[in-house]
Length: 320
Image 1 (tube, helix red, strand yellow):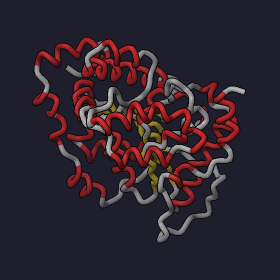
Image 2 (image 1 turned 120 degrees about the vertical axis):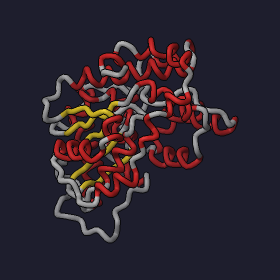
Image 3 (image 1 turned 30 degrees about the horizontal axis):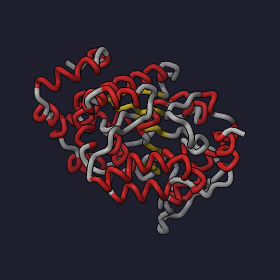
Image 4 (image 1 turned 135 degrees about the vertical axis):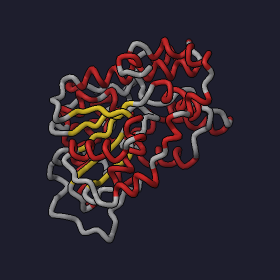
């Protein structure tokens, strides 16, 4: 029996992974009539390359009183595929039991929250849109896109730092015990060794075909630039199969410079009203300084060197 098949059989018996990650119900919230087996209506998928503002976007949606937001439940999406080399999943991977159990995990989280709408963000979902649509046919995908030069700069800065102990512990708690053999080597190479040596990790983000080769062949910033173009292009290509009412793109730069308008558009697309208190929250938490960091800190020579790895997508998106 294949490793994927073994993981699929065990998938059904796992205690809800969001509980292991510490996502317990607020005892002050009274659950609604929804049970863990009720289907989730119009789940909201917050999509974006890492360092594109998805964390901020998740915080924005979590301000809505009817939205239960779950941050990076990668272990749930990949629960049946722990031994996959890449994060890519397609519609054929959405076997009936796999899809049912993913929905059950998220439905239990939603029921325990006492809220009516579910939202999540997982950067590696950039290469899983056909799978997500097969599992959640009525999902609403909000794709936030940021200038590839800014993403490259921000990613390189993150890679300079060793992973925090808190992140290592959170990842370990989220993974079920029978996945440990699949993750031990990855965790040792990408989390433990960098923390022991006080060095940064070699790469970060969605594991896509060709990434390992670029890690070996290219300087780190060029590798990150290549990863941005390949990942964003992958997501936009897969999104062409979605109807307009289920997928829409926004720019990170527009969200930061005009948050009231952009958030209102996003909430309307997701079928949500805009809470009266949200505009004040946006004023207090959105910072435009993030738009200029890469321009201030990257040399012209560095920009010229990474740009070929960002094109032609960078130009197609309208970034000068």
